[in-house]
Image (cartoon, rainbow, N blue to C red; front, side):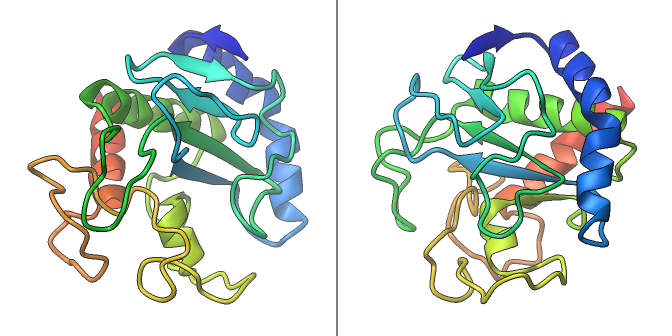
Length: 194
């Protein structure tokens, strides 16, 4: 794992632009950015994700090639970047446990998404930027697998809620913008404009 800053992330994304678009094009879609939590401790990074974010908001890259196919999102890894907050060990839909997402992680995730979306020429919306929970339930209309997310089997529900005042509890049917993906995309849009 290599510690990188946001400028490094911008360069890595730019360098992988054509390869990511080519891989996504093989599946007849645009590139994707998938947001995760690791279900681990605050400082434990995993090779499954291109980018890991520790509790202090620092970024760690597991590869110098963001087009490299990693095992982060079932049947959705080609032409996609996986980014994960190192947190939520022992989390349940009722409690995020002793390792909930930190404010620094949430802000770093949003900044990183803004940078990557900008460099990949992607709109920050659910068709391009999703939590693993949203992807698990095929909320973008692409159906490479049976649903297994928070609205169905709840096998994967990462970032369905953040444990913050804006996203306090598990409610995958919320339409008020309080789902974790909505909050993170909203913050990323703000960062992309400022």
